[in-house]
Length: 350
Ligand SMILES: [Zn+2]
Image (cartoon, rainbow, N blue to C red):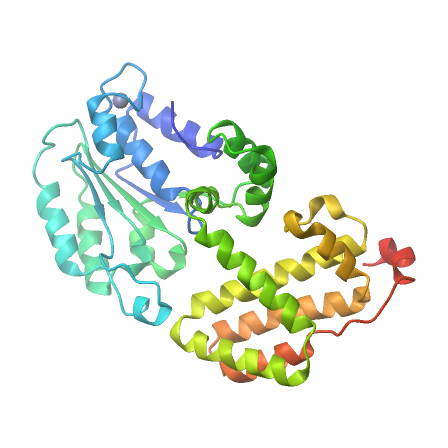
């Protein structure tokens, strides 16, 4: 049994290729972070080396070694530093030495299994030299050697490398699919499974880390509290907060973009509550706050501000001045007014 949630089409393709022994020499798995690319790559490595009749069994010595990264024939290549800062991260790459080492290892026959599997995590971080070096290996495929490249954005990879791989796309999963999996495979209680399935934006891996790591929840709680404070505050306080975010942006873009994603989700929930679609909001644990707050804004105000958040995110990604962008955004945030009568016309809103 493949321990993979969703992606039935990709799975049946891989299973079919395994049965027919018509595997590609290289696969490229493309999808957002935490969507399950590494899980699928490891399951493929297990299926290739499993000792049971119906691989991957997950229980034989081979499967267990792969699961704990102790199998001599399954190697993971990637950036070694554990870095969160986007600025540091942008200078980190998978170097040519790592690829040369891999090439040397791939020239030797499998040591304990049937296939050698090389998984290249975050392949878009390959340096140009390393990518060219890898290309040579991909152009001269050897028997019993399989490469699996994982990437969030394969447009950052040289087209020549992409063209040598079978590309398999792993888009975000549907929240219902994740909710069921969390509940039945991980035993998460229904209410929590529902909340996680909505917060994770289709990325099961994120949901699973949030189960074991409470800091992700705590961080979200703090960010929501801060958002509620800012909405209720005056210009000066909003200005101060925008400046704090701008300073933070210079240290870690990712964190600030996450804050904006959270804002956008919160305001989108407000819009849904406003038109009476309470059952599909994301932040279901604070749904009463959202419904209550939705009464203070007109639909136009909410929609315009969602557009402003989106535009700000794009400007930041295109390297606009963060202080300026965030100040304008913080001041743009609509103020509380009561717009009860609009509820009646809400469903006509396009
Ligand atoms: Zn097995």
